[in-house]
Length: 333
Image 1 (cartoon, rainbow, N blue to C red):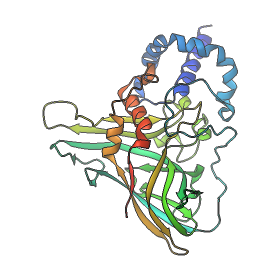
Image 2: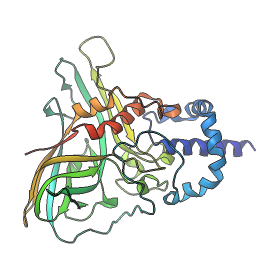
Image 3: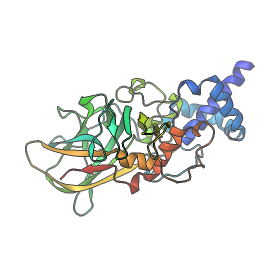
Image 4: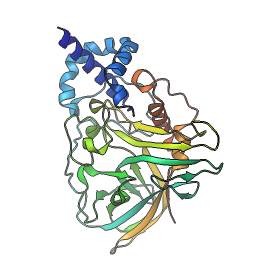
């Protein structure tokens, strides 16, 4: 009887976590002690989910069929639920021909390159050392002057579609610093993409291949989907303090396994794709805007409860809601 109760509590907690869709940095802290405290603090939520445990157990085993667990919270930048969509490791190419457009991803801070593992100076003399920075990009579209979006394939250096149609940027891996798409020739006014992964992939509980594997460091907890963006760093303030105003030391931005909450990012800038020959452009990633969004003075109390009251999860949810308003990505002329 005791093991059955434990199993129900564990499943209930996992469902509650998935419904809200944020993630915690402290993997160790989410163990028995942290989980017990969270369950105690969300008795009402667990009780509400308990009646759905039997009906949703099959959805967890086959999450692509799950629809909603009633999660609240902002869906700024999200897209409609992709009911019936799949998470194919080898997606069907949208076109067999095109021009290879390479976008080099360049994190910057205060107008200068944001160097991984090194002190990056701020204007007040303090510095920031990034120790983990990675994010997913997917569902890329180019924008014509009419505003019409043109879907393009996310591909490897050889032109083959990337697994799951997803690109993982990892600041520790130089090979991941270029986003490549196979694009039809023409003139475009910018591009739009998801900063994260689609619902069908985020709902998966089975082990997936790269870049959606456990080794990606983007899964926590495993039953609650993936992180979309993960940042961790050390702050070196100018005075004897432990923080720098407006610069969180941890940002964990997630989505939801109940509904589509992946942010869509629009980047303006002229792109003239030639008929033949590759095209290379730089896509800057503004850490100033990421830090500003993550520390914005907005109310996220509708999700910042229980397991999600940790600073990194709150910072991540603030960033997710702020992304549409901020110029995190900038296309170089």
